[in-house]
Length: 310
Image 1 (cartoon, rainbow, N blue to C red):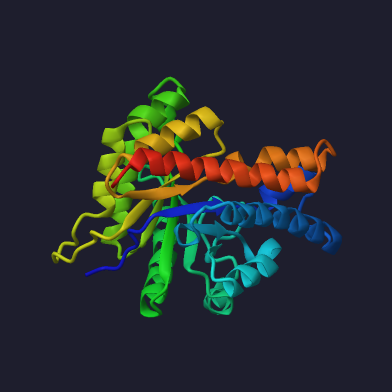
Image 2: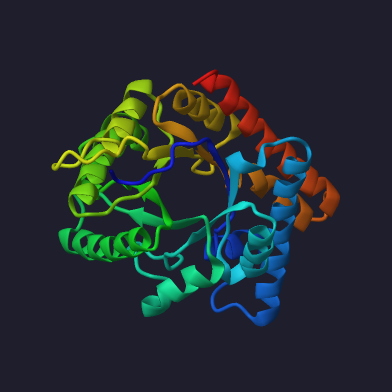
């Protein structure tokens, strides 16, 4: 039987790196040591929001943080010491093609921080560049094998961006792509990666607008192997895509009602507004921490209500 993770899992992701530094602070690569410290302190605000949510009653063993080593090493160490569930990314930031952030040293960094989940973010479209897809798949198989050999959990964030030809066939309508094309491509991608020996324990899935599409994706994630080995414990979580509250709440409700979907990972929709307001001097640090905690609690409450007794 292949591994998996089927317990409730509510993730606060703040592993955004170059995009976060640029959007919030206007910093660009390469950052100075002082700029790196500024970004790291900002991420501490988000982490404190998570801890406040725990103090206010969010269940610790159902929640996790996702933060990077570059700006969040101290956070990862502190969270590990406190027994929190942690997730750490392995991908180079800002690249369209997946590659290891620390090259051949990727395993040493995973071992050093000992995260609960090792996470990848991958852009993969079955109709995209075949050579890029093949290179990504080879690296992902290598990581998947390493994690399985060392009994480490694997979290896979799958993005399926539209190819120009796919958008052109829809008259450039990105909404139509999300509704009519992307769900099927996600299923095809999951199948292709599984067939190549890439075996995540948890799939991070872009928000889906249809319960049927959610079900199809969950069934793909949990389909048996060709030899009959079970993937029945593999879980899926909904990611927020930086959308507004109304859309995030809609996606959470759809996911929560779908067997196989165990939770969510909602980051920017949780922390970006308070962080930007703090940066602009409109609110205090304590207020920012409180707003992040409240928003994270809201997502948890919504998901747990929607999933009912499931």
